[in-house]
Amino acid sequence: MKRLSSAALADLPGDVIRPAYDRVAVRCGVVHIGIGAFHRAHQAVFFDDALNGGDLRWGIVAASLRSPAVRDQMEPQDGLYTMLVRDGAAEQARVIGAVQRVIVAPEEPQALIEAMASPDTHIVTLTITEKGYKLDPATGALMEEDVQLAADILSLERPQTAPGFIVAALARRREAGLPPFTAISCDNLPHNGARLRDAVIALAGRHDPGLADWIAAEGAFPQTMVDRIVPATTAADVAALSARLGVEDRAMVKTEPFRQWVIEDRFCGPRPDFGEGVQLTRDVAPWEEAKLRLLNGAHSGIAYLGGLAGIDHVHEVLALPDARHFVEALWDESETTLSPPPGLNVATYRRALMARFDNPTLAHRTRQIAMDGSQKLPQRLLAPVAARIARGQEADALSLAVAAWIRWQAGVDDAGAAHAVDDPLAGEIAVLLSDAKTAAQRVDMILGFGLVVPADLRASKHLQLSLVRWLTALEERGALAALRELRHS
Ligand code: CS2
Image (cartoon, rainbow, N blue to C red; front, side):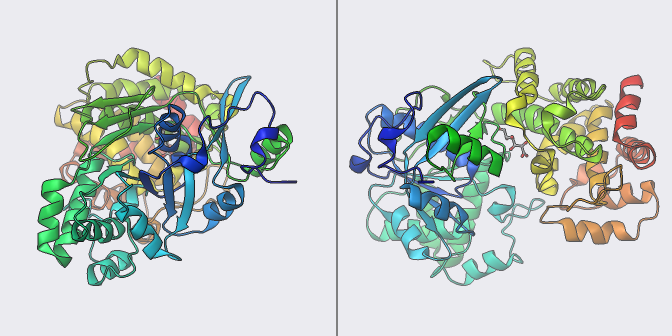
């Protein structure tokens, strides 16, 4: 079957939305690092909106820091891909034209630096996942023991990390007398802008203190909250869309109607006139905290409990007898730790979230969300636990979610089926747990693990008891029984 391409656009079925602008006239004002499905269904769509609105400065040069897979999918398609928005029976297909070029950074590091150093580039966005920032979670200092970062500390000839590429490109811009670009982290991390700024300035300082000062004075690293559920595309999704389009689209993404991007209004250069779905604000933190603790916190709980029960998708977990109660109980606890921004009605938000989780056509896999738990747990679950414990409140539902993550580390579900623990710290955690003989010992080992658990939680007797209770329930009776016990406790 022929591939989706510029030439194929005219022959697509009439109900497929396609770029309303001349792609040849587009300039690339954006470089994106980490082009996965989330970028293609989120930031790229907002820039595509700007292009559709007639401002042709906002094309994207995108980069993968590791694998050539996305480049190999998109290059034969002239950078085009379909975004399929699914909601129950309704499905809308839109071809996104914003991505003009994809660079595989290890193959062409200079091409990526040049794109970022181009006078056309005003914004660099990043989705490099929680583990891409290379900062020690406990101290906030550069993770010098990280092999790739260590290489970038020695030399920026061929950078390997996102902060390395940014520093190399900013050095070029400074030499050329250009202003810095605005660097926007789009990862689900608290204070994501500050983390990126810290990593970039610390790394720049290792190479050239003058450069670090210039970045600190002239650069901008707005904080953001990003939200859109984007499940990984499956081969069946590609086959179904190909049948509908009459051409094959190997770079398609599927997502929900909802989309939100809250951006701190701190740019050091031009930005598009963002439209629907984007909010510019002075203070992103309360938005981010609410989203991380309500949406992502529930997601992680659903992923581990559902995964242990052998259930593949989020909407199927919610069909279990006691799962909705668990989610509501977790939200009841987390909600008390928030300072919601004006404009966020938490009750309405919770109802909308439950409906989003229920969307059956998304088929969001519990395994996908279970990935990288060690990087996700602190901001999603442990922070609200700490806030409640500090006030002498219990955190039963949150503790059950944390215990389910501990149980997940064993690599087998309740039926004895094996799963891989996909996590950068999986090896260290496995070693840590290997000597523990009882649930209580496992909890103690995890509570003492400073890379995940903050110091102020370590001494909490209350948390320790609660985790032991839930881990024992999970190990002895399984996730479904634990959910039932939470409901009746
Ligand atoms: C999910 C998120 O995989 C995960 O960890 O919780 O990707 C979630 O779908 C997004 O943050 C929604 O905006």
